[in-house]
Length: 435
View 1: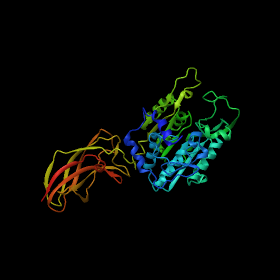
View 2: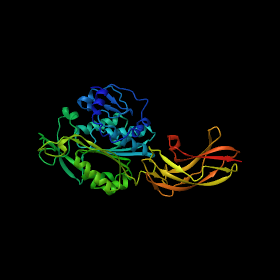
View 3: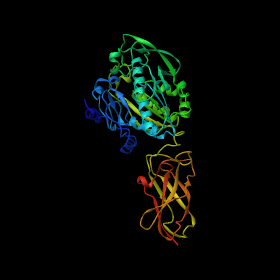
View 4: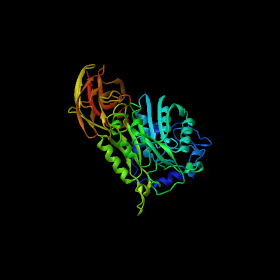
């Protein structure tokens, strides 16, 4: 099986993608042009190296392959999950702090660390929790293979629970460990699919709350714990809302889909992307989870924390004014009343400490060239301008120093990121004669 075979196999799953074409532009910001294929590894578009010996049979066939951008998917995840990860990295300011629960070999903790390193971030702190002993060895090796000393990050051979304690964990033969990735603590003699295991081991249960409070702010928590996602997050929802900027969660039944939506919505989080579980109804199935044929994914943004430094991907605006042209004295100062409307899909945060959205202007000369003058900023009157909302602003304008015919081009700008007009948004254009 090659890369094309795996990608084609995912096409039939894309009836509901959970993202749109504009969302996929984020991948271009992270492609590592220096990434090279390497024998013994699968290398992804970030340059992250995944040891082939730790992968399942079909993925082992990709040994020595350099993967492209994972749209609609790569060998282990669909694009929706990658988009959530890269958004978290792009929003990181000065440091990148992330946790992966049910980590397996650590694909998301390490990929996020590699992506942050590509953006020049050096203060990277990662936490990963995995209950299977062999998978935990894969996890440590994966960290080391990508330049992260496993002893300098918080890696736990444990399971995540609501309360501290111990649980029974299925023991998988080492020779089969790379084929079995869906284990969870046992609540009965059999697992959620009805399987019995010849042997089990005790595994430590680490409370979710104890993990969350170890950092003041998390850029991302990635959760894939095979069924306990709702319970562990409900147990510390207030701390999640106070400390975590984004959550990417894998869901394992339609009930978990709905329960997690209800939990996060009631806590005031914003659902950025979602793709529900795909399942086949099986009469007399032991659990709903056992009917699942494809896990779901939800990407949540904490609007309490993510307005600071969160880069926009939707640069859409509508700016109007009662005037269309006017005369000024060269170098004179004037004020203009404008009405700005957020016609995009993301809120504008106007008074954040980093990367706020303001209104401003540029001057064009009679030949249409932009003058090397950046205008004064007009701040939004509200901290947040949601999609569809408008705000009336007074823009202070200083005319060009020399007489002539000009165009005053008014546009929103996300400071330190981009002018909206340079991303294709239509600016307000006023004809001006300077005397």
